[in-house]
Image (cartoon, rainbow, N blue to C red; front, top):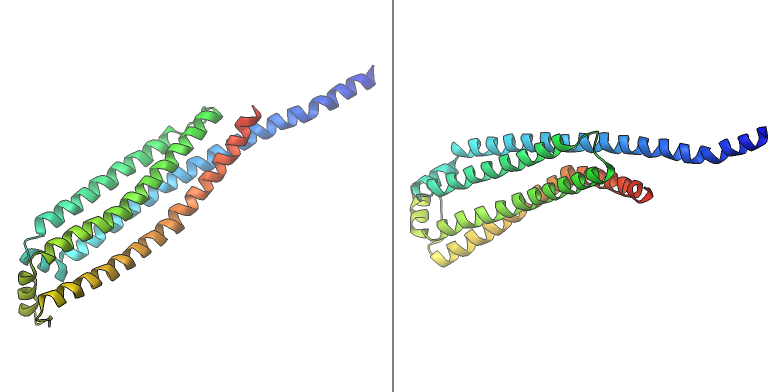
Length: 216
């Protein structure tokens, strides 16, 4: 009889061990996920401060003078404000994602929240990259449409420009493509390193929780 009890206890041991393991995995994944989403929110705030600092820097820069003389101040300011509003809206979504993760969530709910956060971050990255390119192209198109005003500005500031407008236009387009390409690369690398690493960790938690859900 004692041997039978021993065998029964031995047979039950793996199941109990697995149960403890599942709970531990869930708690660890929950803690990591919450921490990652929190860092996404914090980095988003720092990024907003960075863009605000950049715009303040350009306010007193020669670019502001160009925009002033070419009557582009309004469109540039609207573009900047729209960017701020969009970033703030994404920050609100990041914060809501962070606050929504609860210790009482089921595995399935936590998986869905991780997927939701991952989508939000991807949309945020795509938006910023796309908006940076689009906003600059729109502003440059307005500048190209008033080459006479631009040439006058260059002359007033002692900047040599090609006498041929077509040559000037080609030079500006080449400069714009190089500048946008460089800016896009820098921004893409930043998102790849910072948000990419966070999403990689979040995806790892998602896979662990998915395996855990499959076992249930």
